[in-house]
Amino acid sequence: MSSRTGTSGQGSNYEYVIARVRARSASLFDDDDYRKLVRMGTGEIARFMEETEYETEMNALGSRYDGVDLVEYALNRNLAKHFDDLLRWSEGALYDYIARYLRKFDVWNVKTVIRGLYSDAERTEVEDDLIQAGEFTERRVEDLLNAGSVEEVVEQLDDTIFGESLAEAFDVYEESGVLVPLENALDRAFYETLLSGLPDNPEIDSPTGLYVEFLETEVDFRNLRNALRLARSGADIDPSEYFIEGGQLFDEQEVAQLSTNLDQLVSAVRESKYGEDLDQALSSLEEADNLIDFERALDAALLEYADRLSNRYPLSVCPVLSYVLKKEREVDNIRAIARGREAGLGPDEIEQELVIL
Image 1 (cartoon, one colour):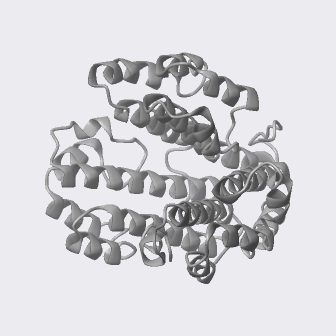
Image 2 (cartoon, rainbow, N blue to C red; image 1 turned 45 degrees about the vertical axis):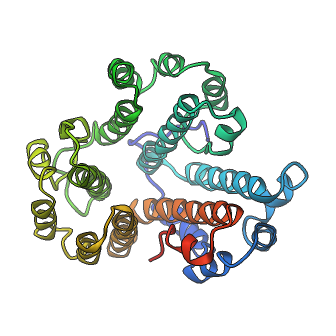
Image 3 (tube, rainbow, N blue to C red; image 1 turned 90 degrees about the vertical axis):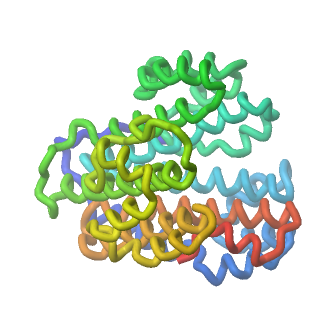
């Protein structure tokens, strides 16, 4: 990631960055592309990608990797390149907004490393899944990869925004033997830091107000996902351990109450400002036997909500963050297709794994 820093005191160059983002958005894969890909073998997928905007990465990596490995490395390198470009183009407060948001990939990378250590995965398997698009330097990521234990990872992150939360969660992890406390600590530190230092009640159509609305929506959706998982699981878990501060849909007490009753939780969401956006997803949830379909619908609803904000406020940070979500969705979908085909899954089975709008 770019090492340049911006300050909110400088002017932001929204028009220039958004023009670049709209051009990049035009080259994203569409749903027809995904439907073609699910019917291809891994070799055909690689050849297809060589004729798209992934051509540079596929050619650069083609002598070292093949098959699914080539596809995955190309996806991750391309994602990092595009998000580094966002920072390189941006100035002032816009730079700061984007840099804050892209720390989500630091969270992804730490989770990937600790999951690998927990499951005794090979280093190469862990490295395949890393995305160098956050704030961590290559040296930091390399040090995490070289860690010999989960405890060593926690110690290495002591000087980051995750340090305090991870240190507290590590004791719970040692007692329980499950990674959930550590993963929750990472999510909470990320989202709460993301919203810290921003005005409590900014004007809704101001640059800061739109940024806050976008982030609050993502926190709401994250809390909703966690609450539904708890409601469906019936497990005796304290919902406050999952709650992330900063959203508008629930407070901690409401989450604790609604997580014990799925019907009440669905009703509360239907009556909220997200009710219309999530109507179809909620109906699917009520009919489904598991949460998987609903969670994909939730991801699609967040993408659509972000897109609406972008159209409503075209000269704001919203189109940029909407593009980040869309690019993530593209990479996740292509990765799922490549892995599914390698595992011998059929097109219909793979398509169920995708987030398609």
